[in-house]
Image (cartoon, rainbow, N blue to C red; front, side, top):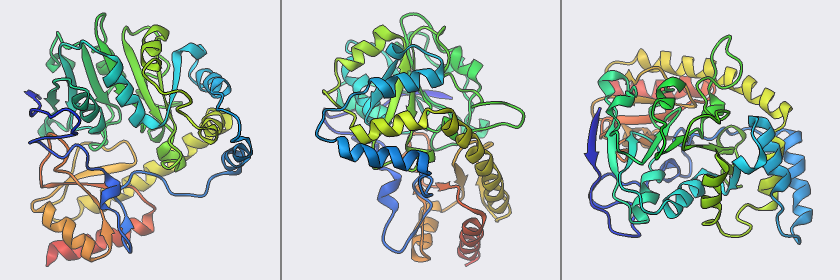
Length: 364
């Protein structure tokens, strides 16, 4: 694990000389391509979610009231309502952090991970350092490698794009007075472990860790990327600072209806069932990929995607596009390079067709 300064940034730009921090999986998708690049589950919305969203369309003349959704999310995580801040997706949460936390002396982002936190910090004028996790160590987090005087630390769990689930104890060890610890749990609801209730390694219910902010998203499991709904969990005074930087009525009425529905006990139970099904589909994908020559799956994937290493991955990605498959390039993530690809977990039939196409390309 290495600590590196990020390349110099120009205010207002997401990147400069380093990886393209503004590149995301949706840029890989095109007409006629099977989408393995975007980590959003595509399935019809259940009635208990679709019906409230549809009903909310009849209430658009009134300004959004976040109170019911805030209370529902708070109840789900065992927190008072003032420890919840609803946002227009997790991406807005990172922008609020960057704008509200002025005067940061040493912000650190742990990579490889989702690039928007660093992009938002740099766009707000912060000088960001990177802690790069080592692929030879399966991208495991060692808290001792994070600079002791870092006053902001951002880390994903499970981490996009590595699919690594860090132990909650390792993350908790990063919390201390005078530091804001941001744990991006956008994919926490995709994780599971046999015999373990709930989301393993999540810090969403922890109220004892100083400076902890947990970022959550409802985009992935429920296929709501176009609705833009997420939230922050943390101490009320810290969330108040972020709320002061948020525009009025930032979250729409339909999005608030979705947040309320997704916080219900029925929704949580459905998430657990989906996570179990996803685990089986992920194991199938890993087995198929591991059987291909020259392909190495990174670590022990725990989420809705798998990171794989293979020589010449950039060329393979282009060949896959020619065969009708879109996968996520890895070289735009700090700490990776051109020999990495991220693949979304899909059903077994899709996986079998994809790995057959990949095998054909690798044998050519």
